[in-house]
Length: 119
Image 1 (tube, one colour):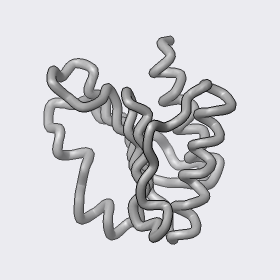
Image 2: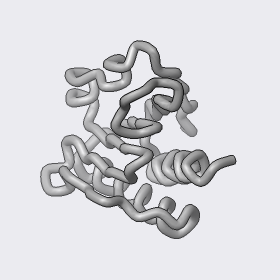
Image 3: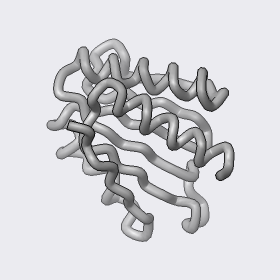
């Protein structure tokens, strides 16, 4: 397992720790000229849950994988929080924003992995 794959695992664990749902990993490693290797996209039911999920992801990534994001945006209104780990970009979104932007389907050639909800 590479460092980046370990980071993805910890991002998933951090999201699951705060009951994020509909977690999807978009694997871009076989596609050339992409901005990162993976997207991890998940949904929170309220702005406070979106914030909690993003904070938990940050803690898991830092404490268990040794990674810190180069940028985090969207924490104030918490409708869509984006976390940039260079090789991995995380999107924590409210359901309406996720449905509207449909990020995972912008990359038709990417491998999508759906992570089962814990509840």
